Image (tube, rainbow, N blue to C red; front, side, top):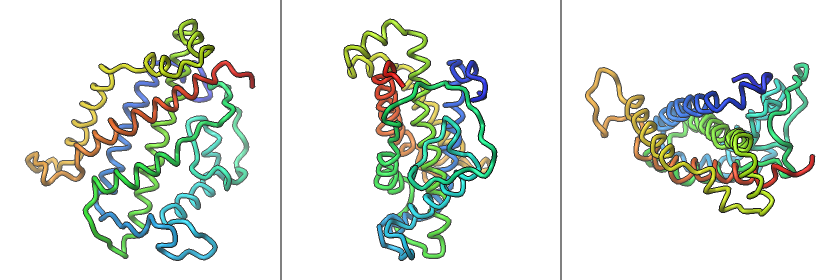
Length: 256
């Protein structure tokens, strides 16, 4: 998939391939985070004092990294959605002229606050043991940042899925958009069979990647809780992706 070549982005086979590859990244990132305890203090505003900042330690690291990454054009790419768009800097690299693949959206779809909420309050507790290690506050937060980025990219990729769906069934989708039929759009983009295939594949990946190849499979020795990974997709990733898709489609006919 090449964002400078629109025909490769709207190819459904390429979209599926990208989504499957994102599963690998997410699972490996969760395995890395599961090495550390929950570290509750890094998620509490003011839990670790930071001069000039009153948010949480993890959010501060994420914010500072986004500032740096914005300087090298990360957030000019159409598949990247920042958590802190208000602090981004002007890139030091020459701008790239990406062809318009997605329809301009008046609300700049961004569900990162919801992603951060379910990650901190549900995912971390489900994959990491209770406790804290002060010497690993930074390492744990850096793992969190990678987890959040990979989840955000996966969920917001729903915009490309929605656009592909619109292009393949324009007449049917257009009627629903005009009628503001959010429920109908949700039903149109839902494929329960594919969802179950995704969950089954994800469980197998989490079990496979989470086991030392020299050891016998044993849930007690897995590097990450495979059931928790599957539940994350089933309860948050897939539903939030649908929210993104429906929101995108509801405004697909809006003028720029």
